[in-house]
Length: 438
Picture: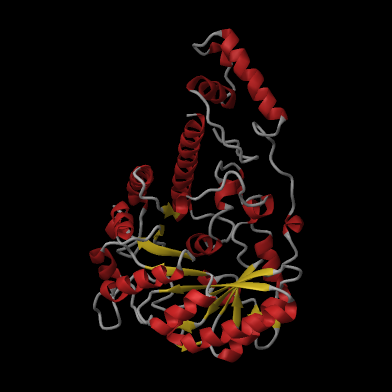
């Protein structure tokens, strides 16, 4: 039983569940087939929870001005608008981002890091993601900017957590050593089963890339010695049985896994259409069963979309405003253009400025600041609003022409993943308490 506004999750018996459902639908709980004394006892306990703010709590009253003042804490540096793969579902047009192939210069990167320092206010902990295309195609600049970032940390008394997203094709031992020394988190693109991966992630010459990647990925993770990483796969209409891809990744030894639904125009043969959604939701159930069974048998792994922290999760501001695109987070292109996030790159009307010229238009920042669950009509009445924070603004724009109108197909998937996350937490919490008792 989830109290939406407070975020409190309650594990209850069937009678209590039925009583709460009756209250939700404005029915008299005393008409239920339970004794009056038992019903009254439950109602008393619910009133105590309500007084504690953990049941039937009221919605928050906030305005966008309470969410922050446009302090930027995270940058996505597009180190390379080029790639050594030609993925058929790539939102970035195989690395070009609907423009020309190019690499970020050290000058642009240094200006971007200086921009972050100047606009991060009092925030001490900052994040910078080396992104592409494929950032390892511009590895010397990755190294140079990491070194420059370390200099700026000392100058401004801040800390930068560098991350890197890579397809691993160009990875060599020198890069591995550097990444495992300097990079806080590594995201590895790998789609699961060999046949699934190779079908949609070929190299420039049209050959599969699976065999180029797997042994390097395993070696990199082994060298991280417990350091942060996750393997990020993508599922399309071609592999709606994506639990099998998660299994394939787990069998390779990876225990931090994400499998993202592709987001493509409905005209694409790989797009997840409305007719596919029911199968996707059912597959999330299959994946949950596999995850719980694996953990029970001592083969623990984490699935990114089933991660919800019910005990020490994000603050109210974060739950309402979401990823921070255009407000706390920005993407920088090889030309120095500033965008709200990596998925807006190429949409010229969303250029916010340029780090080389020093221009920065805060009007767009204010627009994104105002775009949150309190201003999106469809989100206001949704029980999952504080888990998705209104969804992806870029997907909303690309499919609906407005950052304020969520992409409904993604909403269905998010809700199912959140239901499962609640169930997994409750199941494992109950098991933990049972073990404590015994």
